[in-house]
Length: 89
Image 1 (cartoon, rainbow, N blue to C red):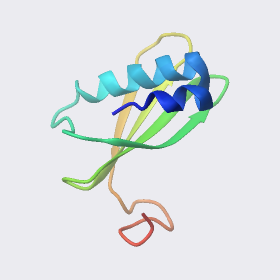
Image 2 (image 1 turned 180 degrees about the vertical axis):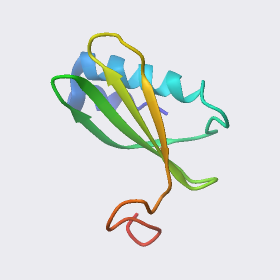
Image 3 (image 1 turned 90 degrees about the horizontal axis):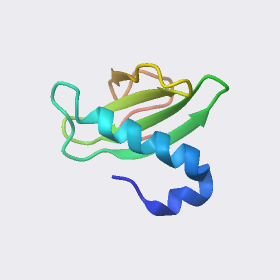
Image 4 (image 1 turned 90 degrees about the vertical axis):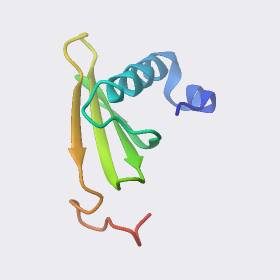
């Protein structure tokens, strides 16, 4: 799931957080067989990554806190935000 080319965009710290996020996806009920990173964001508290899963269609938002506290995985539908849906991808 992780492309090493992202290393240049998000740096080593972001890349490590992305690996943590990817690992967290394997621990949820019904883990995705394949998920593609579609969004990455950084705040002073955490890294946040959004993965897109095609079958069944859903988005998985993973928050990785900088302080090492528990990683949070949120399951979202494909169209639970304005402007999203099958035609937006």
